[in-house]
Image (cartoon, one colour):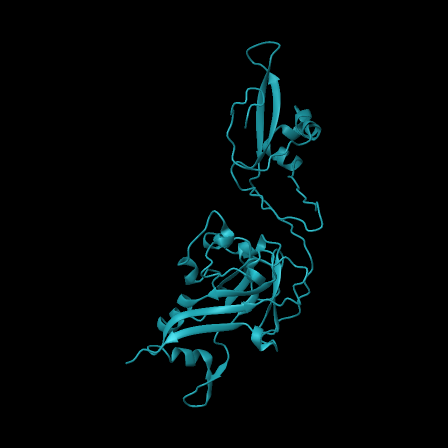
Length: 329
């Protein structure tokens, strides 16, 4: 903060949203209650002053999204007032009192409606609907179908066939590729990132921990594993084409280390860094398929629609790519 008179720096403050509030409200609600029961003890005050409600309103047709960290130790409402000096008569001394945002905090996020039809757990879906906030995510069940064994010509479970390649295949790279259904996302602000994770345990995949963080600009964090949305002509606001999610270590663990073939969840994300240190949040649901959701999906208003495995568009069908080498024995 710069002194407007002398031009000297009087205080250095971190970037933040700072607003001067209506002093009349605070004088009437707090200062004028001096000597009243409302301020006589903490319990009375909590019963009297139940909390604060912040409501965001659009300033334009497109709107903007901003995250306010009310959990930050410096986040507060500071009330400035004066009192009679205890040592000098006819003198008022300045005082401050800070209201922190500790305790219970609730976010009520409302947005556009995304019509989502019931999912097909048996055959899969034509489209995958991903929506942040009080939205939706999709479930990916790898190796759950059957495949024709080229050696015998018989249909066998995919997982059984895949595990039969242990010691015969060296996995070089494995990717899940999701294509955007542009006919369904018109008018939506497409998210740059999606988050694929272990749905059964509510944790990131092993590939997540081996990828590089970017704490300065989270939109570019862990982009080897959780590839950013590829857009037309690589333009920042170009239409989305596809997401490529690298699962090489996860697939290797299933083949070589007999790891459990867990179900995968896919959700939109505003900051994938949150998933490495924050537990997933419980949700109320009428079934037991999903009872927790990623925190980075809850705090984003964005949505997208992807082609599923049951689409008639073969070129855009969600696919698992496995590149492998067969060593000479």
